[in-house]
Amino acid sequence: MSSPLPHPSGSERPDPTAADGQHAASPSPDTSEPAAAAAPGATVSWLSVFLSTATTVFLAELGDKTQLAALLLSAESGRPVVVFLGASLALICSSLVGVVLGRWLSTVMAPEQLELAAGVLMVALGLWLGRQAVLHLAPLPAVAAAALGT
Image 1 (spheres, rainbow, N blue to C red):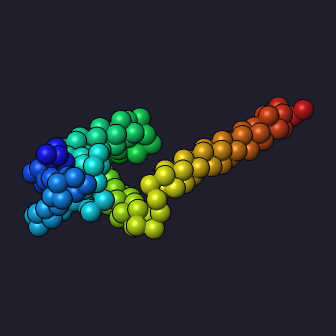
Image 2: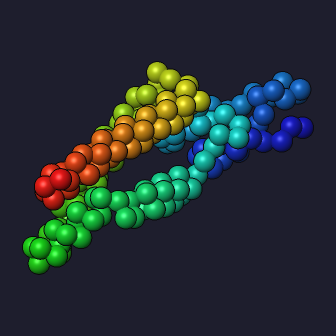
Image 3: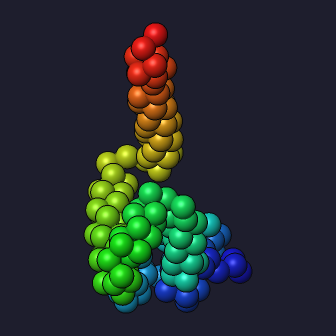
């Protein structure tokens, strides 16, 4: 007899390639996972995805300019709860755009292509920001020389 494969709903189903001719049961209708997640080795629990996302976003946002802006707004306004609510709403909306765009891109691109495109975009943005910083800093010696009258 074949070993059962894990299913996103938590139940087990028989191996569709079993030699005894036994076919896999169809996924239960209560699952909201995409069909691709039902592939062997591709099942990920809800809690695992949630914790991975929360940890990744939390660590990515530490020391980010968004966090610094919230820090300054809180200090200046003296209303930290209002600043927290506003920053939370902004992060939720920003994350929603990323999730919706990511979901759409996953329907038109293979995961490997999406990962490569994201990597290329990050490198390109880094190079562009670095170039902007260098161009912004380059005129400083000329300004200092003009201020000194040389």
